[in-house]
Length: 255
Image (cartoon, rainbow, N blue to C red):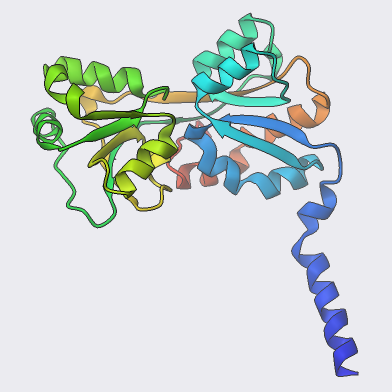
């Protein structure tokens, strides 16, 4: 009798615990997304599936890499990339213009190995000293923030000093891993990419003089297999209801 009761209870809990999965029984929506919004998109996966009644098949990479794959003919339903990339894909006829929606924006920050002393980066002079004193620096060679990082180094007049100790990595995950392992002392990338990185701690944002905000937008492929579900996903990810999740992951929204 007790065994039968426990089995019934477990089955009941199973049904209650996974309503989103049972609701999302349609064809998967293929979502490709920039690493800059990865933490928030991953956190919203289950409620998104419930909202559009379709499972998600998600892939994350840098905007540069994903654009190359799109250019090579890779299929997708929804893309979340830098706003500039989404606008370019609209002009190229690869994303439906009316589907475009702003998702959020992220600033650039500095990270160190968890537990390591946090350097002073609050002012221009402090940032310069920190970069000169660091034994090694890393950032993503194809990351959205690279152009701003190198502009900062050039404006500080320390490009030649920093170059020999700079480790360029493929994507922010690899850059963060270099810091977590002790291979690199500092990582410079989007703050939303540093915050969830295992073994890495955010020091803070770049000084205001060098700070640049990277904006992200979403759009539906002109060849989306299920345009209704794809549009519903973009609407969900750009709605006010998900703004708290984005903000908790270091991504600012207009909502």
